[in-house]
Image (cartoon, rainbow, N blue to C red; front, top):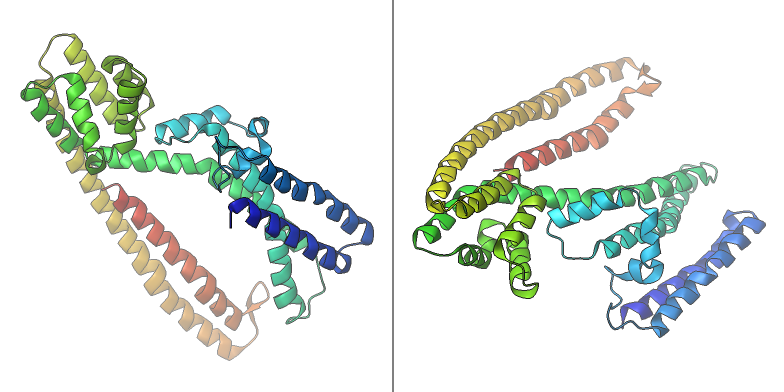
Length: 350
């Protein structure tokens, strides 16, 4: 079954369920407004099925652009910044498609999260704990989810660019040695970077190498213009300096192999300093782990056990049992997750 058929069935099913549920959740006029406001979306999906676009097939990556089209990208602030970061991250997808998907999934996440939170609230708080029905929490949760989807989509190009930067920086020593070997063998500038593109996966520069090959072989640009453009949008400052220095050495008639060997020695020293800094950061993470996840739970559990024997409230109207539950099910998992994320961020730079 094709994706557009699945979407038509899904939207029609949600539409029918809303018809059955809204009368018991919302006032009658408001339920009618929401019900009839969803009718155009059903016809919109059906129209998309009829108007098949062979150039841009309907997928989860293009559905936002096919439905909202390019004008929806004007709703996104900092469009140029997002486009710049997509280029720096080596994303080949059009930034119009990405921006339209940001708007589309941010809008779609609101009703989906609203009904999920509403069902969970009715199941646990209303049915089990006896709380009165309330739409405030589902609406607040849906708003937070919608903005969260938008924020994650906005920051995702930063993450990709940072990941590419770390991969390039930790392989700069090997990249310069590879280039110096080819330069010493008499390879031209174009041959050096085309050979580097063939091993781009090994050295973590596949997006940049792919862009260089595309500019040279498909767009017909010369090697100097191509490398100058790549150096300007590279996420790694050191790699940009390497390319600019290499171009200056070639244009000045110098020996690029001598320049590359000098830069290789420089990057070895930078690598040594970076590893020393990473060791210090891991030592700090170990101290946080011992203090926050070993010593503190033992001390806190002992204190709450003694206070629980005495009875009464401990702080802010909370008893010792509730505080122990909060520490066990909220504080410790969040702290452990934060430590794991911190260690992953530190180690990924190595």
